[in-house]
Length: 389
Ligand SMILES: Cc1cc2nc3c(=O)[nH]c(=O)nc-3n(C[C@H](O)[C@H](O)[C@H](O)COP(=O)(O)OP(=O)(O)OC[C@H]3O[C@@H](n4cnc5c(N)ncnc54)[C@H](O)[C@@H]3O)c2cc1C
Image (cartoon, rainbow, N blue to C red; front, side, top):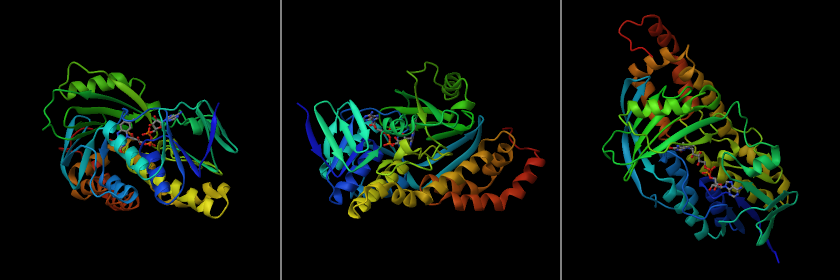
């Protein structure tokens, strides 16, 4: 017979957003259930770049000083655009290159240590949200508030809205784990390896993660582009290529309904230019937990979404600004002056690196680019000696 267990908060999905939400809520005294269909450790397709922005949130949410999962730290990135080098840049803070298998297992463990109850490896056989009841076959869980942190194909988002994302706006990414390459290879980013996106080479301890990602609708043959990119990097025998949707540029303005909140990829919170998602998963997980706690404290669980939306406003604004800037970087007409400018301007390069390390925001970048725009357009009109993009 099914047993029924009551919680203050149920979190579905134990990736970075779910573990952050569960850990933060448990640390603030809520009785939390953390559900995932997989037991941990489990693999997740991802570059695994853990930025200084992510590190700051990790310290705050999980109350740890140093990252407790293995990583390789790099402080320089080589940039290319359409095969031409744009130069090497030094980061003001290290980029930590992790494997999601160990990173996510670590975050999950911290959430459980904080007091969240472990329901990983459990398949959801039934979900109702009004009131919240999650049937796991062996048990039924209930709570006044639910957080859907179940990734880009979110089951909870589909339950609420009929679909997890807008197919014409979603991104897509392909990746391989290449073994046997030198661990001293540069960390490399290639604009133009995919349309409206880029390629990456992230060398780690036991393998090199290589991938391309871009807007799905603008990349009709991404597998061909991936094979081309691998060839550019000197890899003839392509290891197994895997793909996954990437919700960059698809931030949900209404991430949930009343007492049901969506966090991380389920809320579309991936940077539309850099593709960074782990930091925003941590941040939105914490915000969703905060909103749940406030709403419960006020005795109005149905107010959780409006509290959460208010907290998300600056993040939504930054995502919107990045979406506008994406046109400068990726639109075929505008990208040439932009990339010429990027190649020559140390201000723009530094701004990009500061963005990656979480030390500047899109509002600041937009301001810098607007100031430089007349000069960039002049350079586009006088292309002598300029590399062709
Ligand atoms: C190829 C690729 C490369 C990327 N590289 C980077 C990078 O280098 N740096 C970076 O910051 N971001 C990167 N991202 C983005 C990053 O992976 C995501 O933004 C991040 O994982 C979002 O975290 P999340 O917790 O919201 O979702 P996820 O990490 O996807 O976790 C969701 C969890 O929910 C569980 N789940 C799903 N459905 C159910 C269900 N029905 N029932 C129970 N559990 C369920 C899953 O098992 C999973 O554990 C990349 C993405 C891709 C696709």
